[in-house]
Image (cartoon, rainbow, N blue to C red; front, top):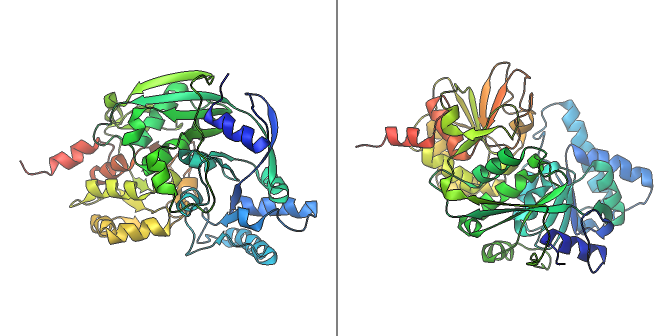
Length: 426
């Protein structure tokens, strides 16, 4: 019996010829990271062990992205703990304010994760990097502390599920709509502790940014990881960035899957996840008319350059509705710079958007756009749970960047066609 790509990666890192779902394995890790919230907890546990030094300073990164620039004294104290640890241990891969960005975008962008890796982060959206053909998963801070000390971690091998996309997407439909459609079908626990493997000819028509959006949200279906087999586009994207040798793994034809589902993506429309679950998915036309107070384009899910371009396509020559606020937060300084170089930032400013330095900010209800009681936000983020972006009485709709931009212009949820067409001369 063959193995899936996830099983092959885990077998190699466990030093075993094969693994099967349910196996408990002790495996090496290639790289690990923590952010400004999770790092202090991991550091505290690490120091209790008394091991003195991390297993390999070159295999660990700390990235400040959640509450930075610091919003209050508590968040400043959190960051100081990590800064002091970095200085004491002479750790080379530290990304502070001004050099930082949203970790999941930044670390891939800088080549810290490559195909074939076991990549572990103290953040649930670490599954983001599966788009590169890596086993990438989030862990708790205590698990990260153990990996910092040992360079190893125990895992249970997940069952694999396969999601096969066929065809080509319609205009305004993106990788975000694909993953929301899947989550809407299987539910937020439909892939619990599973490996979501994405395949099919439709992926060849998606950019890397769209592929990252898909694997990024595997956790929203309860998955342990999301993953795609690396193709030529992946290798072309990663080779100039890679800091280590890479290994390409592919699933065997006779690999066993818990479930296989197929989709004709040419039939899909832009969708939204209505409050208060990523699994509450409906076509945007069915939610049309909902008044919107705030729109947010950013996050590790959709703060990349493709998202900036898509939003600018809708916003060009238009302005944000008087009763709606639009926040645009590029995921990394490189995305921000590219958006400036391409004239996208000017489009955002001319439309009346507020643009922020790279931070998670509003996604976690932390700062830079917290919602009040009764307010409605259309967000390109990954979660819309009760109170996620502010007051428990607020509501969040998840969408792609075009839908969020269109809502900002219309002041209500609409299909992007309704905004773009109504201002196009006959």
